[in-house]
Image (cartoon, rainbow, N blue to C red; front, side):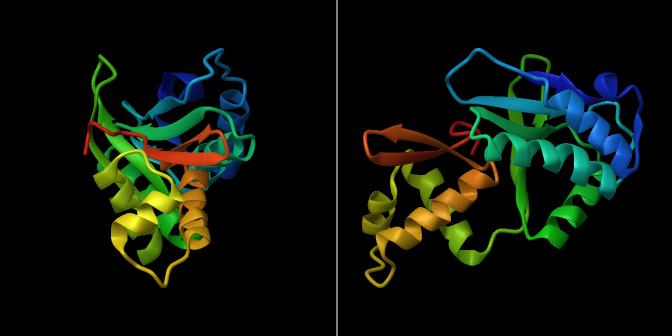
Length: 187
């Protein structure tokens, strides 16, 4: 699913927390009947400027809303210009968080996929292992990396944190939680 942020916000300059909250209220109305995980591309094509306060309230607010409600929607910032990317990186750095960004073509094919922001070294290791091994649970990652001192619970916590940031998709298989990256083919 692609959402044209310039069209939805009505401007190519996105500034202020209040404007960000207005965008968030519009994004919260986005619904889907799809029960499968779905990427929501927040397309910033045509946006010249977006301030940190706008991005914090609008984009990160929407990411937090979708993750807190455990929806099957996974927001990804698409086509940000260098200035928007810089503002987003700054706000993510202050919050010690990360968000997925990419370039998106008209056929909704993502390229230049990147994790923007901060991951602690343990989260980064878990993310890299999921990218390398594909869908996996915490026990599989524990076995794959041969770190006997790191228990399965610690791997579960790392994976859950990555999922809460919208970087991994979580699915249940019985009592097991399986995690996979949003963009399996783009790495």
